[in-house]
Length: 321
Image (tube, rainbow, N blue to C red; front, side):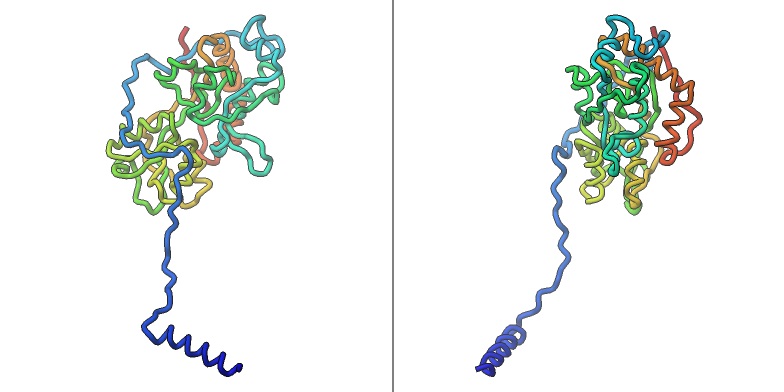
């Protein structure tokens, strides 16, 4: 009986291999990855409108800073003090700027240190702060509906945004550049035409991409980490935004690099709700202090010097009124 079973198996093998059947070869098949939620290619991207508001980076001149715990009666700062904490809109996805440390679980970075300086000026304690994570598109609505007191989230000062929110003086001067894979052949804006280029929704970066490379294919994403993932999966050819953000991406992926000259200046300001002139002047007073006492430089050296190199100091303020 056993002999018949073995013979039957042998005949089956001969039929499979001797009658024209070929073994199945392992052919490499590339998985089709879905785009991250909310990401989409813009088929008819809008070009940036001309800005005519004078110097958008000129902010309200600060007065003398009150002592912590002694905010002027009836002021925006006193209302925050009575509540017990400063509520700040921040990022959690921009490495070394505003990111969630994987070991501590805490949100840290250069922007967070700037926000803590404002809390310290109100309370005398930099830890009297609530951090609310916002996407780029959520920054303005969060200020308008009172969800947050201020936004410190790589937010570029523009004429269009000044119609929606108020800004402090410039606390960091960034520049828009390009991130691409090292073997991509992309080295400047001239190489972006015909390429898919990622930036976040409601960022100034999308308009700049259209302006410098009219034939590029902008792809809007919810967060910068989505752009990096799409670049790694070959769903886009490049990412273009502020050099602070791109340098953090490059530090996390050694197969990418930041290339080309500046495409546009990106002056960061602390955003405040419209109509809160007292808060704008107060924040500008805080920025004056941290520029002078070394706090700004210490924050830069701690978080950004390793990514972007040394700087001679913080940007100088420009005032109006």
